[in-house]
Image (cartoon, rainbow over all chains, first blue to last red; front, side, top):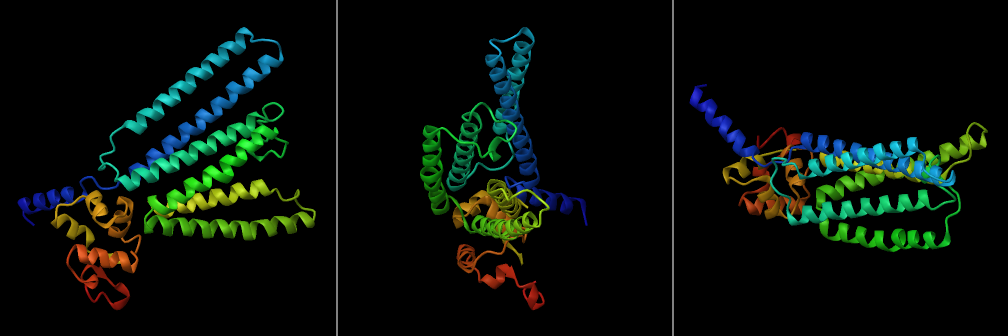
Length: 228
Length: 70
């Protein structure tokens, strides 16, 4: 093969891939952002714990103030890094209006989930950081009503709009595969745990734990099918 | 399923985003079809055929049929 032909083929290859979706870069970006979100939530939890403990003890000591200051600075640094990653050029063409709607709705759902989890964690009788979202402790009635409206009204509306206007058939197929795997986790996981409990091997089944396991498996398969 | 979508797209100098806009799907769907990770539904395959003014079997290669179109 002559040198000009190789150069021409390479140019054609570049043209064919120009602005294309790069799944490897996308996965790296999502992993970095997920890590930063986890770090922000973790730091937020530490900051809240220090604040609660200090208020219970009658005020902030010098050491606790210093630690809280470091935690706040680290949180701000993580937020800055996340914004920087979000704004960094990816080499891909800009998203289509449908993709933008899809992304914005998922971000809205994620933000809603974050607000709900924070409300659940920090409006019990003191911050229950040991059990967190898996706690079965009573909620204040007012907070419970807010959570019920968000979960029972707002989230279904967002979900309906997402299914109706923001997805294409490839994503629907990925979503259905995820749902099937999630359903299998529920259908097999719950009876296995239940039988093991009746046999005296493990504690009683925890519905919220099974719910989160189902959601986790569903989401993981959905993302894998969409971005593999 | 193998297909000629990427070549047909390059011949028209379209990006994945432009093809996705023509077909009313996401770039991710175009990418998944081009790389053979997702087989389009029959309606979408017909839309692709109409867009490139070709028969479906001239774009998609049924490998189970011994690569008849390959």
